[in-house]
Length: 146
Ligand code: HEM
Image (cartoon, rainbow, N blue to C red; front, side, top):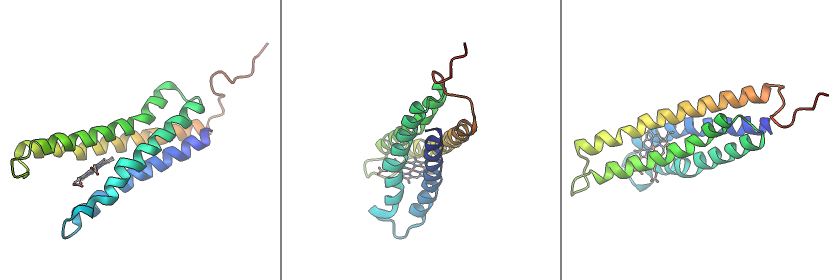
């Protein structure tokens, strides 16, 4: 199960890297249309949350340390923050739905929070690999020594 956890954590990190790529794909698409960010939306709303959840379940089943289990669900929590940043930023647009200085200040945080998601996912992958490589038995599964 430790190896499954490491594989899921690796896929999560790959999805986050792809998410940055898809952000650029959306930004460079001309003309800008509803579908410009569809790959970014799909990866952000579905792929990253599902992988974060599955990796967390795998971490719990593999009896990973509690702190690591908590860190593995963090990308999902930070994706919710990503959506909240957009909702709050959009709410500060003017009456014609054009951005204002205030809305741009908030919306720019989406990129910084994206970096935080990248950092956490990288740390989770590193820890999951170390756990998979370690020979220490999971707590509660150690053979009793008389
Ligand atoms: C781990 C990194 C990121 C995650 C998880 C993420 C997640 C999301 C999510 C969930 C949405 C809402 C999609 C929807 O409403 O359908 C979104 C929208 C958006 N993101 Fe990100 N994002 C990330 C990084 C970035 C970066 C680095 C940029 C650009 C610098 C960016 C630019 C945008 C833009 C422009 C939108 C609005 C797209 C639209 O109008 O449809 N994102 N993102």
